[in-house]
Image (cartoon, helix red, strand yellow):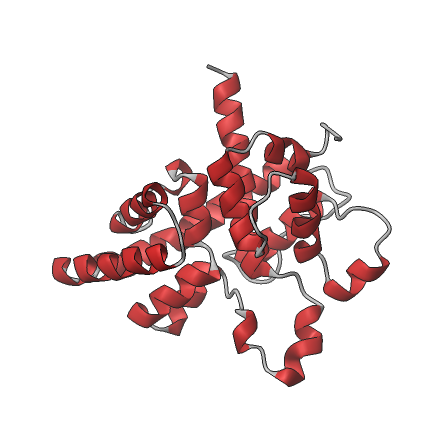
Length: 232
């Protein structure tokens, strides 16, 4: 294993819960084989057609740039380039900053509901998470995160944060607030089930953001956890 590879290093140091969340977002049956997870993640992050001809692994920095561009709060793309002097950590910070802004917008909508409505919707969310097969601890963690209106994103567990930015959560919230807020939360992640036949080829040419955004957020949080543990 290439210990210098950020993705492999973080997968090697991921907890079973974190690996399970990553596999779930990637549509993989749970495995501890980090090389297999790494391959699936890079494949989802690349362009499906280009992947066929790719001779080298897709750099983690390029994946981060694509995710940062997708979550960017301003107009157009970010200023990051693969050959610039910004590090992966610089781009990760930008991703978390924009994720925080989106979470704050969600907080405004969530807190605008009555206490009764918030409790009712939290119950629905817990039930849907249980149906999806998430364990009790994960359900409790995400429910607490949502109850606070998406506040404290940097302190959220990797799994809770990844679910918050998944297409599953977006579609669940769409039933409560409408499609616009769903797009706000997920950064406009498109579910494969809503892609029509004429758009199939175009859809294949873009990264699978519904997979890469939540998985990338898990990897970023794993990196932060490792850094904290090393400094103890």
